[in-house]
Length: 134
Image (cartoon, rainbow, N blue to C red; front, side):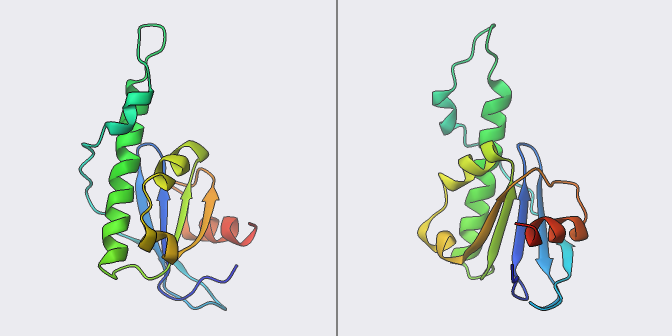
């Protein structure tokens, strides 16, 4: 997979949000960490489909969904503002599903690839290997 210079790689899970950028070029990518913003995780709307009870506590699912919603909102804003021209999203399957529900048209147009894998806390080299093996 070719990763253009400047491509932003969002690595997300139910709790964490990490950003990386290709500081190299397509022939020799160098995945470098970038500071991720502080998100406001107030969107609990997706939780309506989770039924919580003593036998089935879903509070953590609501928190994970709110986190994914906040990430998607931030990514959508960055794409519309033209701060992100090329994007790759890496997230576990459940989180990736929540993100996809919230992608707007502009984000879909900048999306180069998605990888349904848990990669938070991994090095740029590990991320690059995972993308190249896709």
